[in-house]
Length: 106
Image (tube, rainbow, N blue to C red; front, side):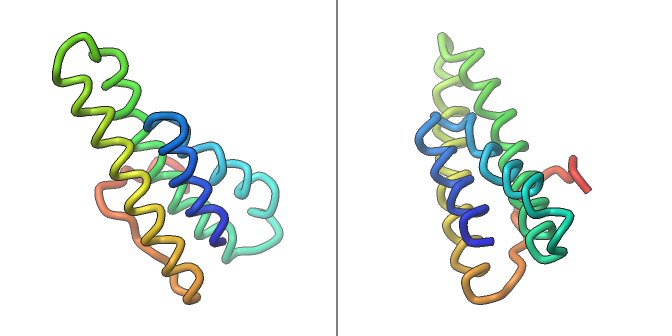
């Protein structure tokens, strides 16, 4: 569970706002059918990271305009900050509800 959230934060940081969805998707595929707790955490993280990956991709698409840089920065910061907060909550045994997240995966 912790790896799902921290992996999302790491992916968002390392891949400039567009890679945060990778680790939550891996966790969902690998353990989602075996553990309802892992599935719940992976779905929350995946929805949040997908939302901000879309913002990051739009930012990269419009990077030639100043607005694109702000989108990339927002995607990186949101992915990292809230990924770390969710990881800490998961370590405490709580399911974290990400803010500003579109529910794409159920």
